[in-house]
Length: 481
Ligand code: AHR
Image (cartoon, rainbow, N blue to C red; front, side, top):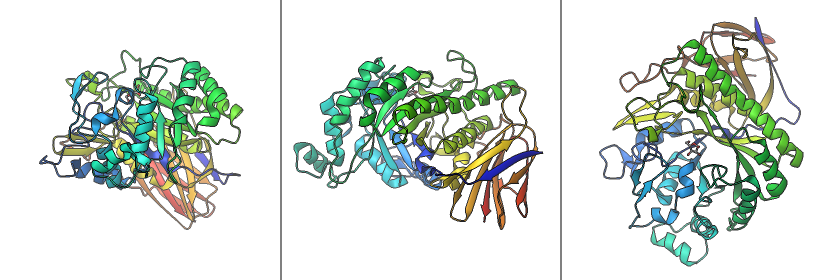
């Protein structure tokens, strides 16, 4: 029988709710159609923002949303997206489509208001200027009486928006300017100087981090700019095969399924390696690791615009979400925000839309199941279980405690498994489960092919519990102690 032992940690970190964050870019149908339809649309909306999508985001308590990119951020000029006369541009990164800038600063802030989440704004370092950035921060956050602030008033907003999270550049080692770390770290130091505090609002400055493999980037950034940053980002995408031939989102065999999981699990190693470098310069762990892009990147759905990155989302993706969130939880002493890419209609989305229809993906349901971990104290979790044929452990687990409630989340990758859970003397246990073959997914015709159900496979025995995990299942257990 497999065994999980739960226990309290010394100096246990809190699992920051922003680990359950999301990312929205002007890419494909993420913003336009997915989130923003305009106030004259027949699709129910408030101020142009889809009501169904907002309601779904609210249900999972979506805590933080990154915008406007991604690659798009490094070509975005924020003044094009305010006021009555919006400039048009071509979105050269993503499909060469016309961007009419009808969704801009005010619309993004309205989206965050409706969802009740924190905004995380990524500024343009690649093709912008320090002045452009400084004026955006002033426009958003200043309560003074300047020409820039008056522009905001003229656009209907008297109070400052008080945006806290600012990303200074995106993938500046690649699409964001092909910079070397020595150069970017100096540019970062310059930009962050003018990302000013206004009133009580002290900006939380996030520097662009590595692509996942490049440890040198992290070392240079920490050596030269650590004292100027609150967070350093990390991007890690799970690509089952190769960049050129990523593999289908829906058509894959069991071997490829396990390969996806193995690749996804490598994010643990990346966090550990980059974290070890950060520890050398920041042993107190003041600076957060911000995993602001992660998730599965498959081939686009056949027949869709390759520049739109639209992919289906199966139980395999849900497993990747479940194991990744378990990993982030376990690294809560360093990882304080993560943003799955991307929230609607792009890459590993939690929501898909088609005209007025909307469905929730299996990945959405994982975020729903895992809500108990938000802001909870991390618990130690020792797992003794067998391995699968490609050498990975057959399950992934994390546990946390909030007052008299313990949440344990288990992703059981393949066959059914009986587990003994030690270290919890509980009065009651309840659970929810998401299960199905790795290839199952929701469609607009069958939106509930994968949906959560009540789990009754856990039983209490005084000082321990027994859990019968069905095959291919993700289980969230709630113990009252
Ligand atoms: O999420 C899609 C793209 O992936 C982002 O724009 C970019 O930052 C990354 O390469």
